[in-house]
Amino acid sequence: MTKLRKVVLAYSGGLDTSVILKWLIEKYDVEVIAFSADVGQQEDLNLVREKALKTGASKTYVLDVKREFLEDYCFRALKAQALYEGKYPLGTALNRPIISKYLVKIAEEEGADAVVHGSTGKGNDQVRFETSVRALNPNLEVLAPVRDWEFKSREEEIEYALKHGIPVEITKDKPYSIDRNIWSISIECGILEDPWVEPPEDAFLITKNPKFAPDEPEYLTVEFDKGIPVGINGETLDPVMLMEKLNEIGSRHGVGRIDIVENRLVGIKSREVYEAPGATILYVAHKELERMCLDRETFRFKEYLSIKYAELVYYGLWFTPIKEGLDAFMDKVNETLSGEVRLKLYKGSVTPVGRRSKYSLYDYELATYDVKDTFDHKAGEGFCKIWSIPYSILARKKKD
Ligand code: ARG
Image 1 (cartoon, helix red, strand yellow):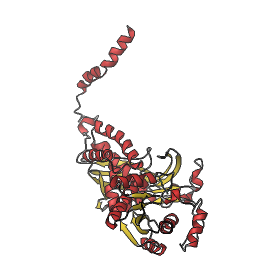
Image 2 (cartoon, rainbow, N blue to C red):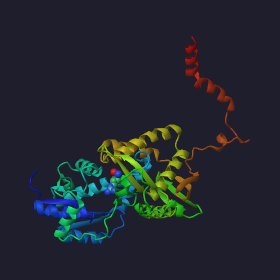
Image 3 (cartoon, helix red, strand yellow):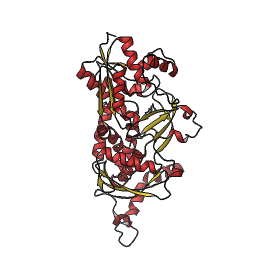
Image 4 (cartoon, protein in one colour):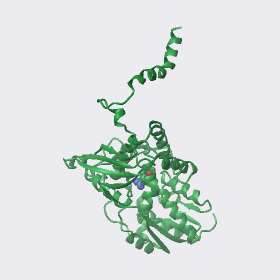
C-alpha cells in the first residue's frame, strides 16, 4: 500500500467509527474527512458532525439523502417486490450502495486515496461497501480497520476512546446492534442470538406490540403511479413524507415486525429482527396491484425475478449490469401499476380489501356467474380436450 495522505470515512458517530477516526490518524498520520448521511436514522447529525471534528476530522460532509435513498434504491426494490429469503425488505442492504456512492464522490472531489467503512469481517456490509466502491472507482483503496486493528473487545475500544478523549455514552451497555433508516430497522445481537428466544419487547424501536394496538381496524388507501407510491388516502405526498406517515400508521398497529434466521453472504446463518412498518404496507399494496394489472405470464415470471433481485441487493451487487438489466425489466412491467389499493390494518396485520386501476385486467362480464356472463362456456370443451392431449397420450401408452 502506498502511503495514505487523505481518506474519506463513513462516519456514524458511534463508538466504532469514532475509534476508527482517531486510530487512522494515529496509525497512518493521515487526513480524515468524515461523511455522515441522513437516511432517516433519527439522530442529530449536527452533534455527529461536532463529534467528528472534535475527534480529529479535518472536514465533514453531512448530507440528507433520504429522498434519493427512497426514490433510487428502496422504491426500485419495491417495484421488483424484492424480499430477501421471502421476508427481509433489505433496508440495510439498500443503504450501503448509496453510502458508497457518496464516499466515492467525495473522495474524487477531495482527491483522497482511500475510503473507509466500519464493518466487521464476518458481516454482509463489508462486501456491499467494497463491491460498490470498486464498481464505481477501482482505483480507490478501501480500508476496514475493524477487520484488522488490535482491539479484541468492546472494552478495549472503550478504553482507547476514553484515553483519547472520545465521548463514550455512559448509559448501560446497549444490548443490541441497530442499523436504522427510513425503510427499515435491523436489530441483532444480545439475547436475539438465541434463535429459540422470542424477541423481547425492548428489541423493538418503533412498532407497538400488536397486543396493545387499537382494537378497531384502520383503513388506508395507497395510490401508485407506475409502481411508485405517490399518495395516501387521496393526499399526494413526496416520498419522505409518505414513508414517514406509513411508518407512523403501521407502527401504531404493530405492523412490520419480522423475525428471521437468514443466510449471510459469508456462509453463516444469523438471527435478525427487523421493523419495517411502512415498507410492509407498501409491499402488500404493490403486490395487490400486480395481481390486478399484470397478465398471468408477466406476473409469474416477475415472481422468479424478485428472488434474484433480492439476492443481488443482499449480495452487494447493486452497481452491476445484471441488476441494471433487471431494473429495465421492472420499469417496463411497472408501467401499468397505477391505481389504488385499500388496506385494513389490524393488530399486526395488513390485509388488502380493495383495489382499482385504469389498467385493471379484471373483466366483470367474463368473471361473473350471473346473467351478465359473456364467457363462451362452449369453448371450454375444446380447451379441455386440447389441454389434456399430452396426458391422454401418456395414459394410452402406459396401458399398451
Ligand atoms: N442482516 C442484515 C443485512 O445484512 C442487517 C445487518 C445490520 N447490521 C446491524 N448492525 N444491525 O442486511
